[in-house]
Length: 398
Image 1 (cartoon, rainbow, N blue to C red):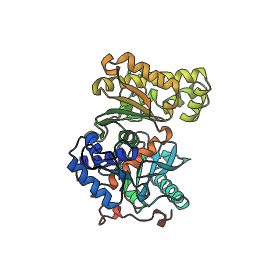
Image 2: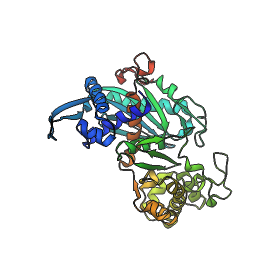
Image 3: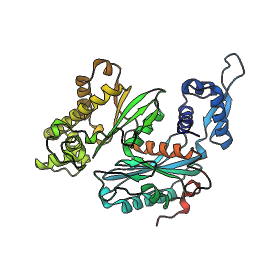
């Protein structure tokens, strides 16, 4: 099965789960594929128990169509959203429903061995204490740095000391008996948005937190680029960055002035006691004038860079997630910069919104990534050590 067929199969599941398409004909129409091809995929998923049939729909001149539904009780996946300062883990069913989620503090600078061990321990601990539908099918992880998804390694991270070249997927597969997949956090955020998007949509999805990242979805599919770093806008050089050194080795990058880490450093230099991006957000919500102005400036600078992306890609929507996107001031500044700097035609029907799931969006994206790989028969082959599907609680955290 090709990558495009796998993505089509996942889109099929999401369309049924959302109720937007519950017959084979409706699926063929929305996915713009022959009904014969859709019927083959549907039959395979019915035989596997992933889909069920129940009742009949109205006739359109022939036989009444059988109605389809996702068997959410078939199984679940675990997802992990790793940030520079936090870890969020949760479980998601096949219908895309997030069943549970937990947060805990985490320092990415502790190094890959410690961070991934903490991640695995959290999943095993909660899996043992939580009643979930069916069996565990896989684990999806979003990391706050560039990831080679083919090799499963972290590549050239700028804010992850000790992670460069680290085989994150291989390390995690030693801790689980289910398939494990890793990707950049902005990419998994985009995957989660793509699954519920309209067919044919182009989306620019931004994660603005301690760092700044972005991803591009074209026709419902994530565009990773040749080296897997498509959308890495954080190291675009801008005038406001001046000669500020960046952790990537260059100077004047967007991340040096518009990220949560940059805001913390700038505000602390002015004597304002903030320890992290969450503190910045709290101060902005309390209408601290200096903090509010700094957050607005960061939004304007992000919008400045995004304007070039919007003019080039002409997307249907720009969707923002991450802590900074929770600020009305920040969102208004991004919108203002885009409307000011983009061609009027590019923004006439452009949606500029927060990601719908808020803090859960990263988890939903990581779970979506896990399910996409689970339903790829190559990745889930029974002969592969990574493809065995067993009770996740059988591996106690060590």
